[in-house]
Length: 252
Image (tube, rainbow, N blue to C red; front, side, top):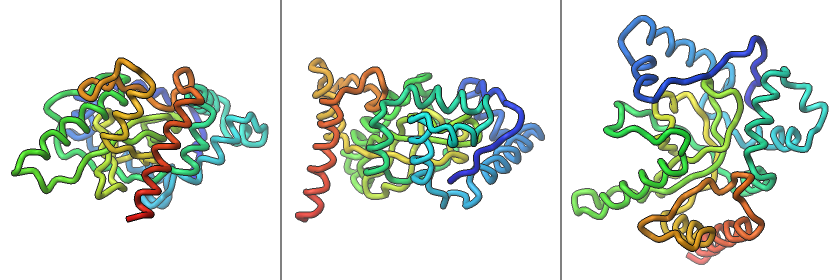
């Protein structure tokens, strides 16, 4: 499992992505020092680098969610608070789904700032519009070699986060181990990702199931595993989509 850092609490109040990008990727001595600190913290969190799997942290989080005293005592009180805040945001079945169907993802580092900025605190929206935009452009003959883009939901963890949190990002259908994170683009290269991918067709189907007003053009996306919005019926729908996909692969 990734190391659980101890020590004095650090407040991670990140500036807007555009500003944060300049603070990390600039040519100033301060930016260079910032990158060194991120490298150092990433090594502490993940001794095996991007070969470190977040799958092994899921049982730890499940024990925390169940209130196991021994597991809770492994974290300093301030960090335990952050872990529990993030876990309280997730539906109790989310970790079980990730345990069964989750995949590790390695982030693709952004070489430059995107032309538009992500919507704050709306990773599900950002991942949806990026998937739509990419898949629309790949219909052009010059881009037909592009692989389809998918929507992924699961856990993200890294130096700029106090604990693993529920998050949404993208991946390429034919290269499903690469994470494309528009929402956290400035420092995503120092994160690890673990989640479940859905094709655009599957994502639209799930969105329309949960919201009758959702359409193909406007799926009205929301996080799937958010505690206050995830229902038993939605969980069954997600599982049926995954099962159908696996059956199709088996019959091919």
